Structures are given as C-alpha cells and as structure tokens.
Image (tube, rainbow, N blue to C red; front, top):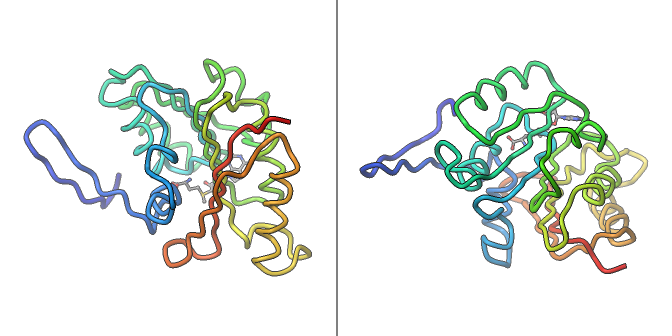
Length: 206
Ligand SMILES: C[S@@+](CC[C@H](N)C(=O)[O-])C[C@H]1O[C@@H](n2cnc3c(N)ncnc32)[C@H](O)[C@@H]1O
C-alpha cells in the first residue's frame, strides 16, 4: 500500500500494520484476548464489509491467502464507492483469493453470489447509521457457527437522536445482545481510533 513501511528478510517481507489507520490492528493492541481470537485463520473464508481502497483487507489477505493464495483462502471485500473500488480492484489483481464486490454491504443478496460458503470471519466497518442492525443481518446470513464477527462501530455515524457516544455504544451492544449474536468482547479503541469501539461477536445459542 502507498507509503507503508516494509522490511525484507531473505524471502520474507514484513509490512507495518498501523493501528491508527486500521481498526482491526487497533483492536489487536487493545483486546484482552489473544490475536487468534480476533484474526482469521489461514485458508479460511472471510467477508469484509466496507473495504475502502483495501488497506486492512490487504493484511487480512496476507494472513488468509498468502502469496499466490497458497493457503486456499477467500476474502470477499464489499465496497459501495466506485472511486475506492478502482483501487481495491487494482489490489485484487495481484492477490488471488481476494474478491472485490462493488455494491451495498447492507444487502445479503449482494454478497451471496460471490462467497463460497459461510464465513469463518466477518468484519464490518461501514460509516452508516444503523451499524448494529446491519451487522446482525449480515452475520446471521453469513457467519459460520464458531466463526468470529467483528463490528467496528463509529459513534459519529449513528443517529444524533441516540444521544452521546456512550449511549450510542450501549444501544448498539443492546441490539447485538438481543439478536442471535453474542457479544464476546467490547474493545475500546480510544487513543488509536477515537469514537470507535470494536464488538467481537459469535453466533449465540438462542
Ligand atoms: C471507514 S471506511 C473503511 C476503512 C477500511 N475498513 C480500512 O480499514 O481500510 C468505510 C467505507 O465504507 C464504505 N461504505 C459506506 N456505506 C457502504 C455500504 N452501504 N456498502 C458498502 N460500503 C459502504 C465507504 O465508501 C468507505 O469506503
């Protein structure tokens, strides 16, 4: 990605994953759990809602697919902005297993034709109102039993009538808790990504 720091050690290349530019990287620093509870496994099926130009997606792809997709993973990345999609599509050209989808990430029928099965890992990072309701709809449609669901919630994107940041986060947590999902951890990103919380969720037993 443009301007990122890289280091080479023989055949291995390391890329800096900046926690001030990626909510998944920020959540990794702030979680009380281990990285394996937040990150997808190699070779798994992943759904990324709100991919932008692919900054975080590229790191998820490194983990899940690896060079040439020798791990056999799939990362379906949905983005509504044609401008962002141009960069994302260019990124996907060199990354087997990355499937860019131009469309509305609130609609399961937009995603269904492109994903090869239920997702082991879902991350939603959409700057829209009703982020929790959307996440419930998409996770119920696609998350595999035992899979990891991450909702990056931006307080400022929720409706002003929902009060201050704390009450917007509390409302979202209530919506998640009253659904088929279970909130496993609430991760506050203060200091890295202001006004943001990541909810780590799993399919609950209703
Ligand atoms: C905060 S940015 C995502 C940043 C990205 N996750 C990363 O870490 O690199 C939110 C993105 O969601 C996209 N977006 C907003 N509404 C959307 C929708 N309904 N469907 C798909 N993408 C949407 C925006 O165009 C924007 O690129």
